[in-house]
Length: 247
Ligand SMILES: [Zn+2]
Image (tube, rainbow, N blue to C red; front, side, top):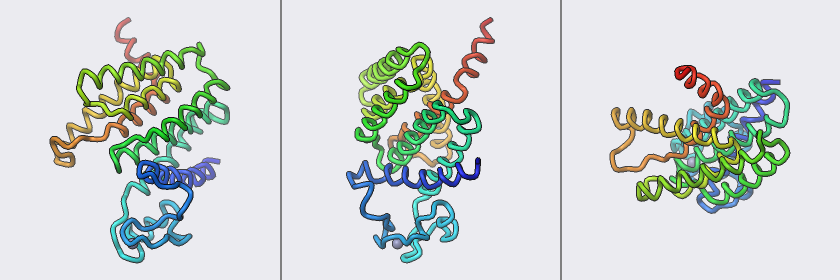
């Protein structure tokens, strides 16, 4: 079962890559078939096999030998690993659908925000509808925690954006609204804390070793994704651990 989910998720991951790369560029996600971003030759069926084709070709286009973005195999592998991880933690039930939805959103944002520094509204709107539907079928306890989390997530980030005068993008603000709908109040606050923590640690190390340049903005989306996923799977453990110090 784990292998089936892994393989299935590799192909899904390859679709999330396409969504993350094309929607911000205002291109169709259905047509045309994927091409090399350098020579624009349409990829053959073999080249569309996730992960494997990248490894066989050594990360280069077979035709023009241009380096292919490592974002593609990374997005595919992350999707597959996280889908399997979610299944092992949750098992077959409605909550697994919600976990997979969250993972897919985070992969698309990871790709789109790194490639374009953008979290497109179209993606957020589709996922807002999806998550509202899922939380109607499988609500949080109490059910209104979704509404509270969504509203506070959105308003908290909006306040930070206003105070920091543009330190937070519009996409980040809306994304926290979506995370709040899914995870509730406690979840959205912890997600924000985790995202900031990851951003500070990775940003600090990146500046230190010269991967990131000063004055060049670092996309926050991947950190929001990591924060939300860690909160989703380990939030209660982290909260219990934290409060064990207070009692
Ligand atoms: Zn090429």
